[in-house]
Length: 249
Ligand SMILES: [Cu+2]
Image (cartoon, rainbow, N blue to C red; front, top):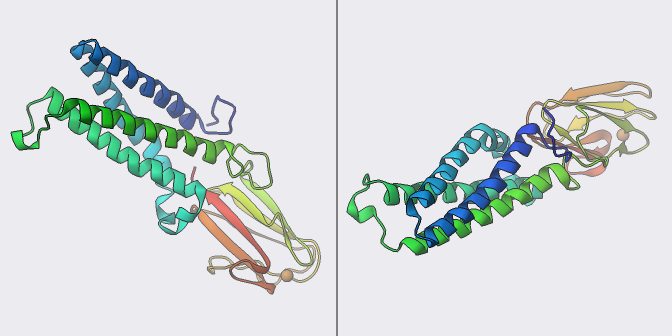
């Protein structure tokens, strides 16, 4: 389902963005409550944010990050995967530390040796960390949905359609790079010459294409797939070659 912020993001991503910003502000409000010695209201506020965020992780963030995991660690050189991975890793730390603080502050469940004394230091650390994660989350939203590689961009690399046509001529693929969501089909149409379309990793192979013939392949997993013409190119982007970036939904 399409988002409502007009950025090209999904509905879920837009909901998550607004909820995350609201929660970030709520934590700051909670901090001021503590400063005014309103500790019960402070506790309710911060605990609510912590639990609501668990729900957002389970319902929205984890399902969309799952598609990134098969790309690791190789994909870390790519901004698209790197920013999401940094957000996920630090986010897990922030959420766990938050839950730990809640356990210590609001319950007697933990034994004495697991409890900390320096309240303010821990809570300030957590608040700062949370905001760092939130900012990296905003960066992830930007890269995924608004930046030059993002789904919302209108350039040749934007996966705006679930069906993209790549033309073969002498001796190149146009566009050379395309970005599509998982499940999209790429159609290669040979305008001139004798060519092939071969995945660098061997996952698809067209056989010889004469002028006027076509070949298609549906990408079912996320990742970056290099391909080349068997007659005029080689794996690794040499000669007549191209690249399809398949992004998680
Ligand atoms: Cu060729």
